Length: 102
Image 1 (cartoon, one colour):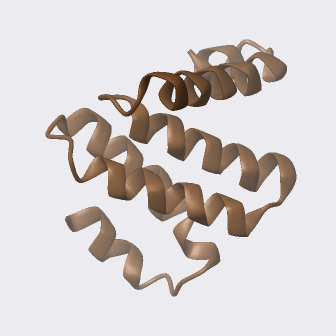
Image 2: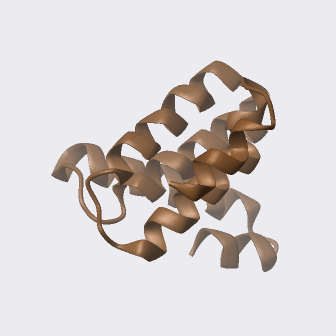
């Protein structure tokens, strides 16, 4: 939903969608898409507010939450987004390959 809204020119709807996903995860507890909600919020913090420390914390939370999920679709999306948009601000780029392999 978020990327579709962005490509259609509704940037503010993307932020609302991310916040809604995060709020539902906090209220209902972790589920299959929680790691995606965390990484989406991390990107929101990084790009929208230049909060690299906060983005890194939510990115790590996404990766840690992702460890408990067997669904390959979410694992791939979360690790890809984390490695390319969050991790490299805090670590050397050589570590990105290792994140994507695991």
